[in-house]
Length: 195
Image 1 (spheres, helix red, strand yellow):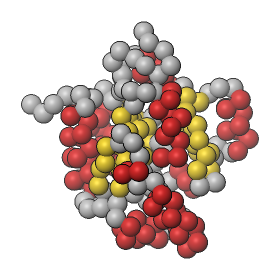
Image 2 (tube, rainbow, N blue to C red):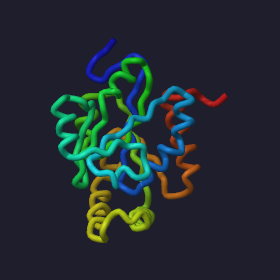
Image 3 (cartoon, rainbow, N blue to C red):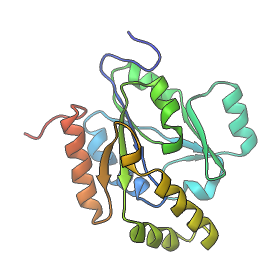
Image 4 (spheres, rainbow, N blue to C red):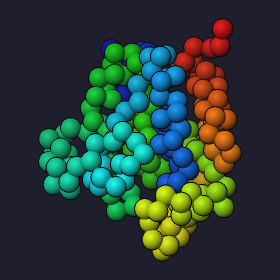
């Protein structure tokens, strides 16, 4: 059995993209299809409950997060948009069992994630800037200034600026993004091909 994130069968899939690109919606839509194929979707630990809306995240206080970090509970952790995010070591257990795992990750933490999991497949979920602005405004979580900051951050982290990243467009219907994600995972051998 390999160590430091390398396994014989399981593979880490990092889904990254700007806030508002629809990662949570895509993950919820594809969850039963992936679980039927033996692919796990890791739960994120986040330091603010409002940020957990729309996904099956575990909301904790800053102190709880710091305690978990000190106790080495996280396989991956990062800070973005003023929040702390973590993926527990359950990730490593699944990979060691030969199970592939999909993680809602961070573009800004990509180098660290790849250092630990060099074989990870990175998929960047993208949307057009007008669609992204509309989605951020519609969800009502951020002030106009924060929305502009997120849009500016999104422009810095386009997939074409990230090495060895697969791109997935989610500007249209969610069902199309689901089908495109499944096709990409089939191409990579993470899920079984169509019959």
